[in-house]
Length: 578
Image (tube, rainbow, N blue to C red; front, side, top):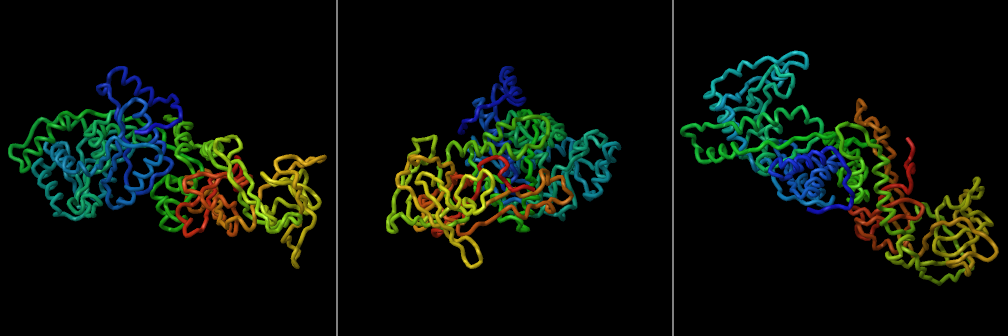
């Protein structure tokens, strides 16, 4: 298990674990797990859980498992499993054990038989709609199913026939027999098995019944020896069911006289008697402004092509954030900064942006890129000369070295770095005025060339050869602009990404698709970047001088084509306004 360089802050979960260790609870051990369902790509909300579970385990010298809760094969596949493993490792963590809920399908089934034999579960033929109607409401108790009084023998026979595939999907469910009058709706005879004839990505067609999450999860935790089962607040009302299932299994003390699978059942029943109850602790989920984290809605964005895949840089998925240029360190820092609380709240996007700016400002190499080129001819510079200027890769980090940037007679600057009629306090280039080129010379604009339509196409300038690395004699030049050589620079496509939604809380809208920001991507063709960026590496961040932080697009930069994605603007408030 790796560690990160963010400092742990105090939170109530750390305090609980600290106290448990002082009291030698759970035999003085700490074992956590990260249990995603492989039905989509991980998002920024999962990052909080990953950092919390792996971080707690590392801090207290414990273990953390990665477990796929793969009990819903209709929506799960290998691609999602592989992406989850990749994202967890990318964040900087490794698991003590890799498990799947499907590893326990046989145990889960036999434990369900044991619940039936103890009179604690029954097979129900009510439809899904009827089950909901019978469950009652928050103010009215539920009504018992007519099938609740089935005999143990009949329930056991039906459940085994469910497994054998004799019944249609939805014809029967297995329900725990708890309390239809419980004030907690989750305890009103919840379903623990349903019939689904769906191919499973790991077990194939071996099973046509699948256990429900609430039944599976607690047993999986117990079998793996998890001590602290950390989950988000929506599972708080499920905790009594979590504890109930494990308590009933621990109390099983009888074995049918001649079961077909006697030896296996004896083994699992003995194992159940030794199960401990992990401590479920709930914390507030991460709700980040201008994003949604519902996998169903994220999948809708992908399938309806509102975005270009799960790894679109506008998506809040870890794959999307990685492609956008976010670093593991910035996300870990973000998760540490927002903390762990019991109170749901919205986190400002600016907090995440601050974390990535802080990281990239410290570590990103500097480079020059011109997004909207304007041609500049330096008439007194030799036409055939290519001068290699040495410019620092990072102004505050000399240890990062210098790079060579070619300077030629014809260079390119940003169009908005020149103004015919300058606004107040304009410190860039004007006709008859001077400006310094970053890491280079002072130039003066002598003439403005326009086409027949009156559009500026070229500036004719001169340079002061005595101003390389020093100020000109007798005059002060205030402005500094970036530039690239026209013949030596490289053509690039630059993608300016903005927030995907126009409102801070898209999940609260009647239809989240109505608040998609249709201007969330601006693709600039024909941009020019300095020659050194031809060797840019995916995964490295670059500060384009005076423009923003960018990264090479790892997917679309192929066959010599350079594509750069904007990670974040240079300063807060640099995004397009709503």
